[in-house]
Amino acid sequence: MSAVCAKHPDETLRSEAVFGWGQDCGKCEGVYRTKVKNRICDEIGVPIRFEGASLSHQAPGQEHLWAALKILVSAPGTIPTGLLILGKTGTGKTHGICAALNAMAGIKTCRYLSAREFMREIAGTWKSGAPETETHVVDRLIRLDCLALDEMGVHGTSQTAEGILTEVLDARYSAMRPTVLAGNLTPMEAQGILG
Image (tube, rainbow, N blue to C red; front, side):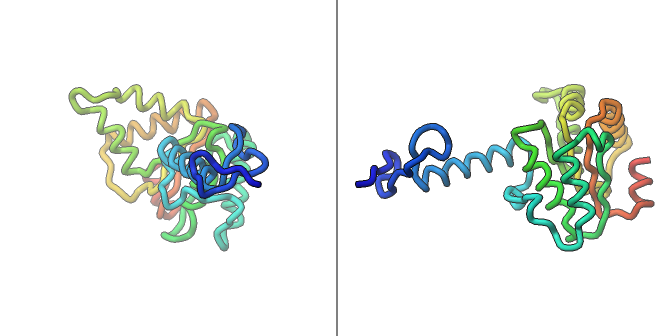
C-alpha cells in the first residue's frame, strides 16, 4: 500500500524525497518548481518568456554566442569585461543571455535589465520620497557578479542617463565584473552609444 501526500490526497508519495524536506509527490514538485521559477524571474529579472531558457538548448546558428555564454557561466573571470552581443531581431540574443543568467541563478548574483528598465530604475531615484537613491541603485548594479543590459540603443536616453550607464560600465570593468550588453545594433551604432 502506498502512502498518500498530506497536501495532495489524490497523489501517492514517492519512495525518496526529491527536495530534501521529506517525502513528496508530483504536485509538490510542481509547486516547488513554480516557486523557484518565480523567484528567479523576480530576483534576476529574467522575462517570464525565458524562465526556462537553458544553455543546453542552443539557438540555430548561434554556436559562437553559446560558447561565449558557457564560458561566462563556468569561468566568469576569463571574460573580465563581458560580452557585446549585436544582431538583428530574432537571432537569440535575449534567449542566450537569459539562459546564462538562469544557469548562474543561486550561484552568483546577477540581473537582467532592458535598457528601458535600467533608465526607469535610475529615473525612479530622482522622485521626491524615492525608496532608493541614485547612488544606491548604481552601487547595487556595480556589485552584481554579472549584469546583462538588453535592447541597448532601442530607446532614446538623456545625457545624464548615458553618463550613469558609463559610470556603471566603467566601475564594473575596473572591478572585473562581467557585463553583457546586447542590442539590435550595428558595430558602428554600438560604438556611438558606448564610446
